[in-house]
Image (cartoon, rainbow, N blue to C red; front, side, top):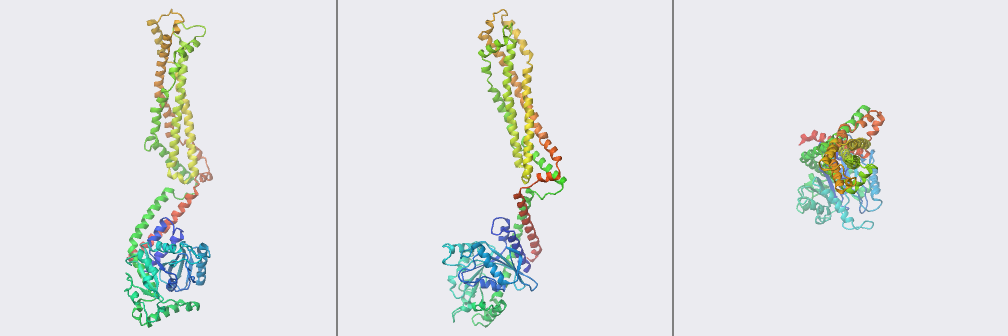
Length: 609
């Protein structure tokens, strides 16, 4: 039994040490899956005295009105030696052997949050007591329920306390210790009222009746203790706390327990119940019930712990394990991350991931549309043809066909192809640049190293710009090649046409008629269309060769060469992690350590089931 309950105490203490209790996250889930005893009762019901009786020490602040103003998570650890001491979570390196100092620290720590007021706070105080005189238990003491707000308290204090109490006792793994004074009607008990709201069948509720010795003479609480007034699934326990006079005289708990036993043994009303009355019995009863409670929930706790371990290990693998300080290992890590980025980038181009199809859209839609919009109709109008041909003839009119005029018309037309050629290069570059940036973002391993992520992204962009420059030169060269040497067959057809239908002896004025000029414009348009079809096919090939294929083949080659020349310190700087990520890894590692230790400890005592 002590193994199981002590195990729960150790796990709960580890949870609180991580500072996540009361917040969101996996550690809170583990805490809430572990059973604990929540002590509830009205103000001045004697619940603080009940706690001190179970612990066997006088350590809680006392006074009139609301004294407990913050939850007190009290973990009792049974030890084999006679030493007794206490530790606070907020003062982990200090042991308290003077329990009067413990009382003062509880009061001081309460004031640190609430101030010297009568307000309450839901921020818990965590206290562990180590003693051979206690049973292994986790008890949570809460502010006493009240019916009205007094001077110095907010108007909402009644509801605030009820909500705080309810938030603890509504959890299915909480055991409710409902403390009620015997000298008041049980029907008016604040503790029983709120316990019944969350546990109507009384399956998780233990009733404690205090102040039996203060009842009016001739009356007793047998109807309550024997379950006739209000029945619970578990037996009621009566206790007799120290009187105020005993407290003033510093009567110790050992003597108080002895007086309590004597009271029940000598009582005519309760003598037959002596075996299940008193603070000592209450502590053992709670400890025994807690053991059974834990046994029943071990499979669920194990399943939850294993699930959390799997999730945390998956997250830890995603953000990466701690790095080695060795330069060779760091260089290997950098190159591996670069290769992962490069693989994602190629997946985009090859259709495994979306984005590469946009390049084909440039070739199939944007390029033809740009070629179609070129102003050839205006450029080859009769008026412009007349102007260019006349200028080409100079002072000597052409004899048969205006060859120089044809050349100038064709060359000036072909120059217009430079615009679409450059546009297709730039459009492809912008797509490749966007894919590179997306690939950097999609490489989850890179997010761990913002410096490397930034340098790699910049290196990829610079490489793509060099490829764009090379592609632009190649594409413009294709256009210029068409201007540099015209297809001869086109010109050879012209004299034949003149011989078949023309009149070589016609006057110069006839050669500048509208019909003649339209024929020239038509011939040039036919030649330009032929070149347009050629470029429509050859420009995509040049772009793919110089940009897409080259990006797949050598996007990071220059970056690899630079990284290979760097020293260990420079490599470490590249692998400088995001501080938030480093902190997250530490948190995950601590949680994993907690969960694994909890799993191992639960496995070691699971046979007790």
